[in-house]
Length: 105
Image: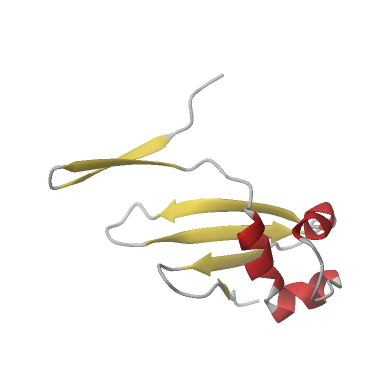
């Protein structure tokens, strides 16, 4: 098996390595995603749905996203249902709330 493609960033004397491999969502991330009205409406989720309940009906991954250009990074979440259609994309910048990315039709 090949190792994941990774990026090496050099910042002064510090070297940080990030990978573009997807990660599972934490319980806290599921709870934060549940607070987004559009997510609840899209999947018919109740306000008190558990992270486990949500994970049974929503495909979800988390990336630590960094552009190839300078200076842009964020948490990137991609959510999809059991129908192949446009996934719901959510981002969170440092110390901010999650927000849905809107694309023109």
